[in-house]
Length: 260
Length: 317
Image 1 (cartoon, chains in turn brown, red):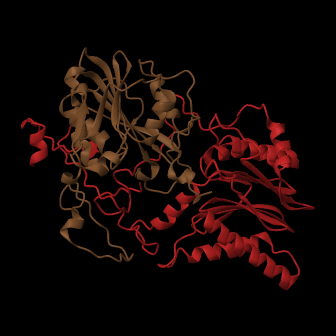
Image 2 (cartoon, chains in turn blue, brown):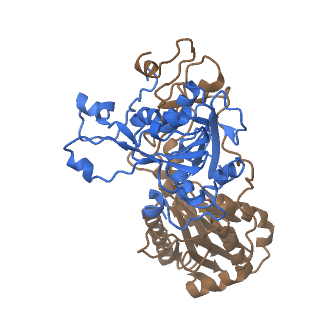
């Protein structure tokens, strides 16, 4: 039984784990000190100009694929958020890490694409790094995705839709929310949760849309709901003709030979 | 509460206890009330073994196995008075590999198409072939389709009741023809089997089932060519707009009166694809313009027997 909020309780199982090791090192191997700090370049203070209408945060393979396929050309990033490099770490330098980046889509719309390498433990640090831009925004929209198996339902349903949208918003978000609210006991976790929480505390109008789907394969059917969402917003961000031919993300279940 | 609050310089007047690390964000936090966020466990405590029942009377491992069927590509089965047809969407695992076969002949009067774990499908198809051969050897007659399905169901059920086995993660559509006429059966990992007039299983198969339901009355009296065209249209509805059916990714199998089971080659498939070329997609996915499709509903507050509190959520990423 969990004794405090957020505690992950390991379940007992008859599965035999050969290496039964109860050392403290193993249990806390993912403590925050093992994760690198993030740094922004260039510094936000050098970039802040006028107030922006929309700060868009995108997290997850499906949403990233949607942006690549359907959004206007985003050009070069105006800022990047990377893990801080420690001197003498050859292995770190040799490793290619995709960075998170902020792009200017329109004169008053910024897009932040979160790197898939970021861990949940870095959510807090990441949120702080992008907070200067969020403070300067009239509203924040966060897009994320999750497997449909993470959506809590009572009964196994053969006819459940393959994809649907749910939303969470801050108290002061007054614009129209374009999908149903996410019901309990479902939750959002990680960077999207961190950003939305930050907006709630600092009273920035924000809404989070989470797309539940069976597969992260990016095609016109899987991103249809996002396309419909953005067609109703007062920002012209969508291309006339989306491009799905780059096989942006296949998902392990598609490219593997396990399933046919 | 300690560090997280102070890092944000939380105003002490704020009452609601927020999960400030942002690791979790419950909708309850934004209802405006002073409720504590609901306690969440990330594992269902009744899902680690197939032999464990939940208090609601569910076998979660069996239900999870049924999700594996939805990871396979879509496949359709339908029948008229004299023939049963299987249409399947083939998948290429990489650029280098050919599209993998989905339709497996079992006997001269039975064929199957699969959706889910490939290896499990291979084992089941081998079992079905063995049973058909044994029956033919012993009785000098073809094994009735319904009997084969019953035997298959019994074999699959054994895996849902033993702690050292797991359910088969594959769903089959079985097309057969015997003294009783043409048959289309669906089997699933729960070891249930269903005699169907028409059925579709696999990824995004809901669109195909919608098409089949709309045209169900037409199948009985239509001829074989029309039946195959209906199957192709149903399968086409599972595809996104930018992907088309072609001879590489479609497989057609047919069995019936005076027709031993056969899977068409590319030329045979091309002939039927040409017949539906140029037709617009009809009976496509449920209309979602401007609205979400009806999602599965979460449990109501006062439901009957429930899993004990705290509520559980499952993470399978």
